[in-house]
Length: 400
Length: 234
Image 1 (cartoon, each protein chain N blue to C red):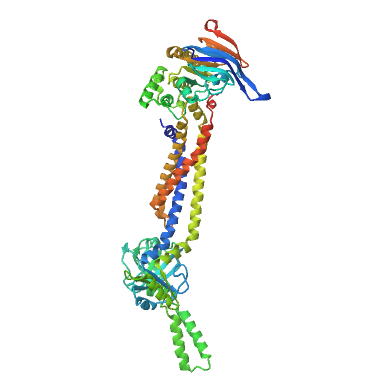
Image 2 (tube, each protein chain N blue to C red; image 1 turned 60 degrees about the horizontal axis):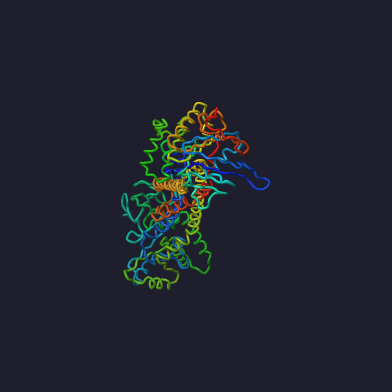
């Protein structure tokens, strides 16, 4: 006869409520693990979707994600000519926060060359960008409809396509526009500012006595052209030919002034070890604390439940019941509670994980490891109750 | 052969100046099929006597033999499996019925059988037989909380009888019952003692309940002061 099941059957209301409470706690532990994995997935989403072997950025920086990096767009032609490089594409990244429907609306804007790398990895609704200007593809997470318009900088952009769960390393949903549009949004000055700048440069040049009016005008045009140019990008990514030496290509680009070639692996390390390490440690610690709390709660529940059964245990001992019957009753209840709570937590997180504002990645290994940990916690926690039960004297069954 | 043999049993709680002698030099025997009462006021040591025989309290001095097995001789004998002896030779009935609240009447009896490794089907069959014998056939699947005091005590008696023990020890089995139910339980115990050929030792402080007992051992201040045989009980 299974005493644990009989006790649970009799006290099912209490058992179910306790399991639900514990299940909610384990659901939080699972979500923490999911957020932890989600951080990695988010951090690497753009990197993986781009599929580049090399990221060329401004010298002495860890750009374009961890640090600011600005390089001229036309360096793409030089990179494309490096032996071993099959394709080189400029990319522009910036985080934008605007007001939409009266609320802050934040996203990660990616400008890409339509014939190059770094565009939306998939289109789940609508189409990809076809025109050079004023079209955009947005990630699902932006909650925008096809045909919806949004004002960025000096122009309005129309949503023509929806892509999947693309996000920045910070977890903001991604939007894609043409490189030219992205450069305009990021670098183009408004007309008033241009007029002011031109006036200021003109006045400064006019103040130089040694310049003739023709020279001053020539200089003013060139300085304005330089300061108003938007042909700057954050990185140029390159894909190598099969069998090409990554190291040789990196060394070759590294020899040029002002540039650094970061391999995909190095970029992963920058993103994961550098950018999200603290968040990862924080979440890891939080998970550990939650597991300790779970262990304490399970111990308390089992201990209290054992105290409630002191007379039952004493009676069992008095009628000659073996210790294994009593140990089995406590241990099985503890394990059952852990298993049911785990199931509740799993169902809860499975039903809600895609509604979290940040990505939750539930990996089978994490879930299996947590299951083993929960079982171990239940087994260890039940020792408190078992210890108490084994100390109960049969004489405690006597008396009124 | 006696079912219970007690010789100069003494139980002392504590040591030195704080030592309290609960039972002193108690000696008696009970035959199989005999119903014997230990009668005395509260604090006279009757429950200590019962628990010392029932392998719950270790006697300080003296000898206890249960169904031919010496369990104590100047303390418990070394190497004895007390749980096995309790399981196989003894049945207990308590003041409060002490049924397991989360088991039905049937399961409460079955548990006593299953811990002796009796197959489940056989245990169930015997438990049903016993409960039916005690007029509880209609209450098999009721939890103790749904039983009356008398019914619960009869389930406890069925549990004590389940393994056909040679000795049944009952500690104030009628204390929680009204007079009528109390008397019914005592009549039932007498019948069971005869039918099962078990020695039944009942602790009680209530003179009214000992009618029909074969013998009475009257205990005062830890000493058996009187042994009254059947014919002398009035």
